[in-house]
Amino acid sequence: LDLIRRVDGEPVPVREKLEAIASFIVDSYRHDPELMKVIIVEVTRAANSFGDTHIGTIREAYELIGGMIADAQRDGLFKSEIDSRFAAMAFYGVIEQLLTGWIFGLLPQEPEDFQRAKWLVVETVCGGLETARGAAAAGS
Image (tube, rainbow, N blue to C red):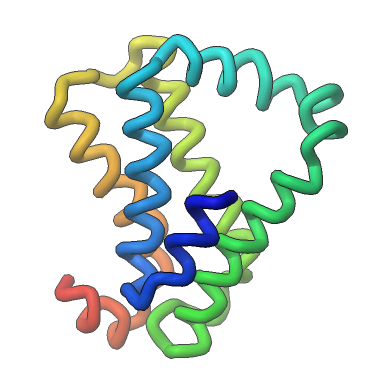
């Protein structure tokens, strides 16, 4: 949450904010895959125990990301038809599936794969949300 708040306070485009968050998570996996495996497979998927205990933190993370997306929607950079809360869930869902792919050996894990993964997460979400104005601002 601290990283998300810090990134949100920076005067950078939403793509860069989401890239910083995705980078933090991807780099966390890269540097300690066993810990991330426990977090993804054992903890977050144990919804009855983890979810009940940490629902406030989970909700806050979604709200912070959703707020970044809502700001981009108000600025005309992202489509307003997509609910910002849904887009935040999609962002985290893409990251979780990426990590799952690495954990179960479904995706390659070379240094260039980690860099590309950061771009793929952001492009998947932002590319689907951007308006023509947003794409032009992002240089797409």
